[in-house]
Amino acid sequence: LASRRPGPATLCYPEADQYPINQPLPASLFEFTPPAGALQVDRLGTGPRPPIMGKPLPEFSLDDRSGETVTRASLEHKVVVLCYFDASALSADREPLPYLEWLYRAYPSKNLAVLLLVKGDPDIDARLSKLHYTLPALADPEGSLTKPMGFTQPGSIAVVNQAGTVVLDRK
Image (cartoon, rainbow, N blue to C red; front, side, top):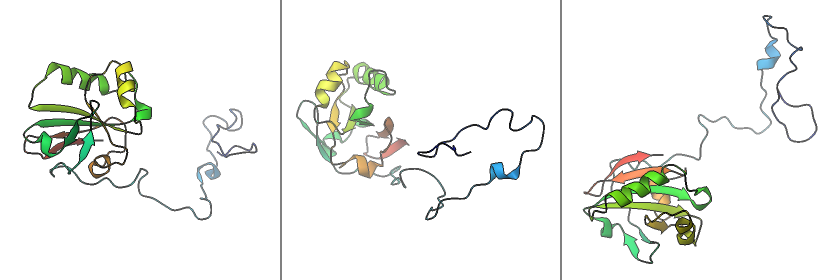
């Protein structure tokens, strides 16, 4: 039910004594008339994601926290775990960050790359250091890897196999 108060429309509950218990409710409670110009959609969201499963990791060139450039070619023959975060969503206990940090520290293999893909903060190194994270973070302000991977939600993960194919896409 729309609020009768002035200002933006909000949802509110009807008064408890307005509708007796175990009595039929008026059909008007379940009617909705959309505003003029409203469009019907099949699903809410940020739009279609590119189908990346089974496809090669897109070409990219991004700098990590130490200033080294990371490219698709530099990750060849490695298993790559990519996790996307908008800088505003970073916190010490935000899943899956603690697990990724553990994975990065537990398996310091040259055949495994755990990378945090971060959008929106040029000083991500200071923020991650303050949170005691050591895993590599790639700043992606232009979305050169974020967009083709279809990452829109913080915590989205993709795993790329040693052949360079995306084998897990969890958004």
